[in-house]
Length: 422
Ligand SMILES: C[S@@+](CC[C@H](N)C(=O)[O-])C[C@H]1O[C@@H](n2cnc3c(N)ncnc32)[C@H](O)[C@@H]1O
Image 1 (cartoon, rainbow, N blue to C red):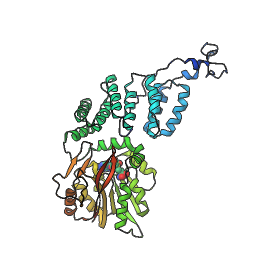
Image 2: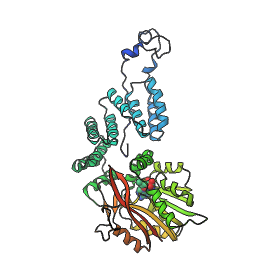
Image 3: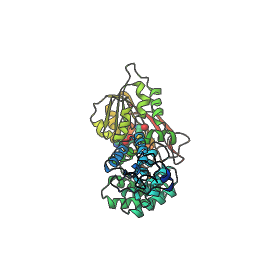
Image 4: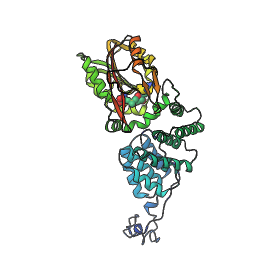
């Protein structure tokens, strides 16, 4: 469920159906040893069957809290036990489906079960849309989101999900209408404004911090597996290889700054060469993952430019940004701050996406645009722009390697891996 809104309302009333014929012949859940038909159903015992005990409001809140905390495996375990007691609680099946999906397991049938129990629930329809979208079944996902919006015409998250799904299918006008509808529901929302800018070609300078935070807080649990196994992403390892191929680590090792460190994939690759490894990121959920690796001496939740402003001059040997400039178009100030905090002879390694087709004979020069916000919500920089910034700030370009950065929707995303020396 990459970067999409999921919905759970712990206060939502539950529904319970009466026991089926088969269930009536099963041993009574009250533990009497008789069949249900001859026991609680008949009123033979005074106890009510356990299966009729609904999850309490406190239990529902606790389940949602576990989901929000990312404790998916534990949540799955708790839900399985709860479903023994209340097998017809649509809310629990809904949560079960999402917790399975968040672990990379198949949660679709659990969500479908929730829908059977509660057919007119907008949130369940929305979540099924998310799962189908992740399976590449865009048209079906679209239908579920539309149904969610029929059931709840003010469903902010479903408009965003539908907008994203329409954009994936190239239906830009309809996607724009969804994001505009979101903006009507939440005027001033900077995340939505960024989607609208991306679709309308409004070339803003950078993605708003709230947008980056939202995307990566929602993505953190799946990030490593999705990027590495599905999107063929290996920029962290390749950037570190560029650095170590060019600079030999001194015996006391390097002071390294990982800007936009995410879950710490760069950190993993460079830790063996680092005396001190510092990471900064806007997403607290990504930082939790990086922290769990126990390889960073310092992690900061800050905008990377604000963080650099607080660092001493000439304090780092190596600065790395893997797949980070795609969220910032205009990078002039970042490049000059990197120059300030790098030691003389230090290096910066980064990746960029580019709109340019891969040139047969090396990087193209003199592109008319410096940076561009694409309809995906991400930025590209031109090689000419980056080259001008390198020379304006006194960097020597050691490498500018045209390459495939990752795969997206089955298509290659082209870009460059760069190594500049101070
Ligand atoms: C695609 S991920 C890459 C993460 C990591 N560098 C890697 O290669 O695995 C981009 C990361 O940059 C972070 N990011 C984007 N813009 C940022 C900014 N202005 N300040 C701090 N972090 C930012 C995001 O939160 C996200 O974790």
